[in-house]
Length: 290
Length: 244
Image 1 (tube, rainbow over the protein chains, first blue to last red):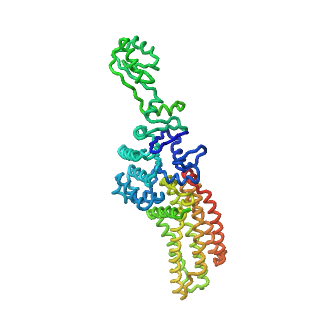
Image 2: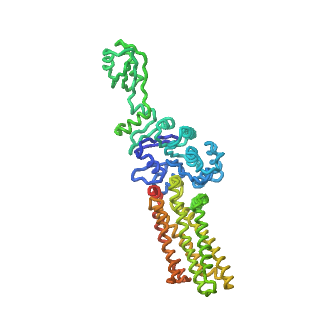
Image 3: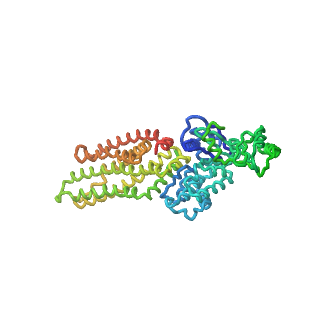
């Protein structure tokens, strides 16, 4: 895969199970070595022994499993990692308090993590990934297995981080989440099959469709539309014409004019917008589609 | 290697161990059994008449060998929690993502298994010395401990046996995929050390200064060889992908 994630960008990494998302994250976090290829994070080369420590210093990782020390308190968990990330004592205290307050867990800081709910644990794991103010954050399925309320809290927190202009690499199966949070999205299925902003992916991968609601469809109207070169494909459902067009902004007035000339009575003209799920499913089912 | 980084990992493990009752009971129970309960049982089962002081001295030397295999058993329990416990709690990945080197991680983890084990051994041994001296003073009006044999065990054999056990457990933990297999294989380390006790008990081997120095030398060589093996084997990628 060839991929560039800009500073301050939130990049979503989508793909089916076993597509290679977690492996890619682990390689970028210098946890496993790559078999070939090259990658850089903040100017440091991934896989280069002398750069590995510098990369680990500048990244924060939220793995798929939170991996907290359940018998220890939330404060202690964060304090251990802050020390491992070489934070000064004042920064340690300040960041632990800041993140625990932001996540609404300051009052429960001395409770054993084992007594926390899944959502609370996930929040602590996110705080742990942020404790040293990393410039790059890797989040591997941050809302997986969370109830809707906890997932929303975590999502809102990621949006807060986005406002702070942190570079975030987000692996997720949640397409709605990806669409709402990410600036760009990459779809992987053992190789990178598409990259772009959610809107550009929808535009590029999915043909744009215009839906024209008519009072009645007849052969004359259909013939008039079929003769138009701007229309790639026509489907009819009841009194609706569903037309594949490349450029609706330019082509729709031509189509409307032809239908009216053919005696058609137009009630509505709308655009059929694909969801990111439509685009994603098409991509993973037909990997050759670019 | 930055020792302070290794120390953070070790203190983190100490905090986790403090909350683990099984580890605490093992650390307290095992030295208590071997340092006090077994000697008390042996002393009070002796014939009521006077036994020669040389015989008693030889028995005490044999009992001293407890303090070679106690520091070998304790790391088996601790190390299996230290290394495999990380895998069980799925905390290895975030830990390995921190800016720590493999050596710091290895040393910190080893320290976390070594220090409590050797400390519990020393405390147990001091209890053993006090008990034995009270008994021999009451019976013979003399004290037999600390002796040169005891000092060699405390200074060399015990810490070297402890290091051997820690290293073997590190190697086993990074090689096997199963927690129980790691614990059972790790436990095998004490067999050669128990053999020393058995040989001494059956009078095939005499526990004296020279035999203890010889045992310590063998342990030292084994420690050095295993240190290099564990450094080669202990690589974060191996740990992450093989510790399932």
